[in-house]
View 1 (cartoon, rainbow, N blue to C red):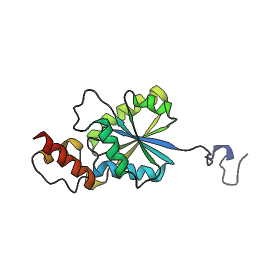
View 2 (cartoon, one colour):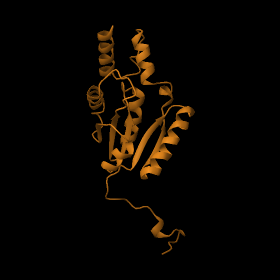
View 3 (cartoon, rainbow, N blue to C red):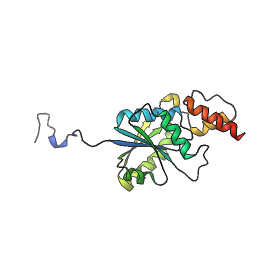
Amino acid sequence: MRTTTGVDASDRVLPSETMTRAVCPGSYDPATNGHLDIIGRAAKLFDEVVVAVLINKNKKTLFSVEERTDMLREVTAQWPNVRVDSWHGLLVDYCRENDIKAIVKGLRAVSDYDYELQMAQMNHQLTGVDTLFMPTNPIYSFLASSLVKDVATYGGDVSSLLPPSIQARLTQRLAEGR
């Protein structure tokens, strides 16, 4: 049936009774203010956001999976619709098992886009899960966990880059390793 606007009523998107879920995947070693910016913005767009700490055997991490999930639970507690989980394996398998239809990825630079686009296309091909790219707030465009760890290792001030509780744990962990 055509409406007076010329749009077929069957073409309109209607509100759904289903919950919208997205996943924000990453290693989060450690979680930075840039990560939290993306998670917080995603929390405004979806009914539930799962922060998935991915386990990558090829990466040497400073914090265990349990430590990273604990820290993330603490710093994301301000968003009641955010939960933290961990996963070893393909992210799309996690999405399928948890009925998640969207992956949210923060992009810092064009170089991120090149890699992430390829991953997004592969993920969509495998399972139909869509990836949404969210540009990082410009104040965090340079920020990477590996850089934060490097700067902190040599005594640099990273207090503006991390939540205070994570900075304290990072400082403690680095002191233990010296």
